[in-house]
Length: 398
Image 1: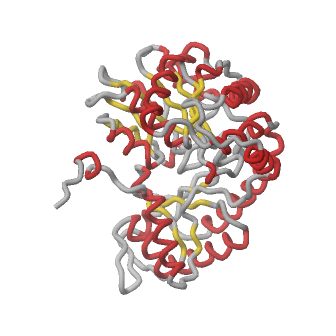
Image 2: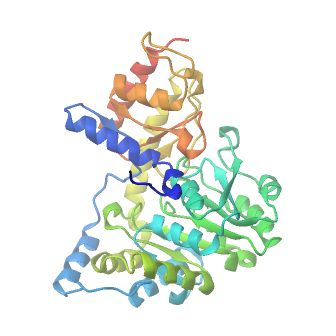
Image 3: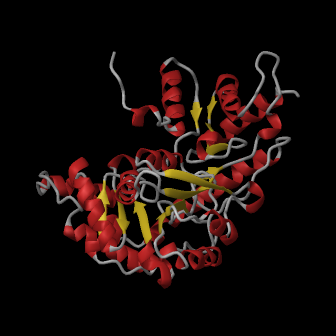
């Protein structure tokens, strides 16, 4: 019998990918499933980016790439950081990876020893916890409920810090909640980090361009902690390039060099064609994304309109990304006569079985009273899905 590693056995499967896999299996069986489980824009990659990829193929960019990425791509990312975020990274402080998930893993593996503590606000993206566990780190969770818009405050952060704290990981705009930290809120967190110069903060900003109110602020914007912050981003969300697989970091040169070293032994450099295409994305003025952002805002408002009419459902007003994260604990303990709903996982499976709608249980995001709804789908699909969800919940009684 094959003995799998303890590392693997301790790891949970990604909740989002598990539901997406189940949705695909049911669709293959002929079921009319509407999947709102994955964080994947339903837009196509812009034509000018695809043209750059085709040109790269024609120009024979088909050989191994430098581990940290092509120099001209890293220079383009440095210009993007300066233009969009007011951050001054040199190309030597930038490492390009095969998706932002690999970027995060590189950072965690570069910094964390067994027993080191990593502070993570909940709700959190599902992979943060598992990546930390793989490195032998100890996740320290700060809970931020719907009553505080799913955002922690400086007092909570200060209380969670111990002598073992090595790293802090969060996202803004946030997956799964869509909450966005304001400049004032980030400044208060920065003041805490400034008192603890040995703590590194990983700021996941993959949804930065999908903001519905005001403008995005990077945590590294605050000069006193610039060298303590690792800024993670990528092309998947704003540029609708999920399948292209490219993420990147801006960090102190020491951390960038460490990530480069780790990546050199795992994957080496990411796809040459993707990198050439990403250059034009980085150099493009993000104002061209306004139509996409407006579309997501309309979809958010549409789904919220349905949720507000459903008894017992509580939801905040997210101001970024493309998720809603309602509290559905009102339905725990209810039944349709054949199934009793004990928790969020039961509810998601019930909605899949009765409503043919695929959603993700909040437990994997550190918020078991909630479920995640991705509104990265057409308005027609969203309307149909929300009508099914409304009808299915109406069949439950307490």
